Image 1 (tube, rainbow, N blue to C red):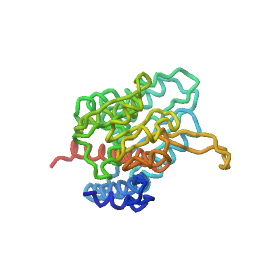
Image 2: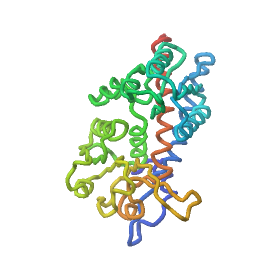
Image 3: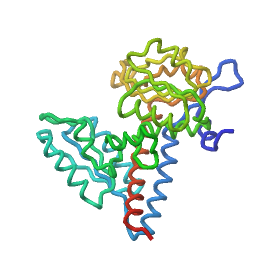
Length: 321
């Protein structure tokens, strides 16, 4: 039996199961993220009522003025405003030194009124920046991106209830849940091993009781590995790399890729595609995420989820009854 949410997601799917060619059910990140945001809004209202005007607070720290970073940040700020999170954008100039960035992080770490801090990457500075050092400087209790070594270590050991899970993998898990397909006992394949997506995705699937294979640039015979997956998550950063003929019939396919390819029919001269070749894969998969409109909206929704969760933990620590 599929969940009610999964049934609603089916409404957007094309094709017919009874026809000779099976078309995958589309897992809409737009629809699912809306459900998450609506739930979080109610949780924020509850906190606000119980603790006289209390609101979760988020700081987005940016170095430089990259257009793509500005776009991502505006999306986060808009989502926060809709939910009732007090979000503040702190932009440091591109001449900022690493020490100055660390000082800004320490200042936010020590501010009890802030519950979440994210450092927008990449760090756009003319000066040398050690990204690992900077991300690890964020207090684990406020690391709502889940990128610090403390939170990564807890995740790798299965301590899921005492850490912040990186937003994209967390969003992927929510999308998988919407299908009604149980992760436990399934063979999951993750293509890519980045610290932001692939590695934490492996850990999340493992601790949700899947048997997990991680593939990367040195994996021989990638199509064979992909073909074993009941659940396939792809975050390799290569446009349309995974082909439909590789995919196991009926598999759940989650595409984390965002790539731009030439397209003369578009005003911009390009279009956005994922790491999975959609047109061929949706002929074989049972469920598939679109690009855009799949994993992307869920990443922002899970950032909001982590921020609300951080605020709830703050209240538990400081207002025990």
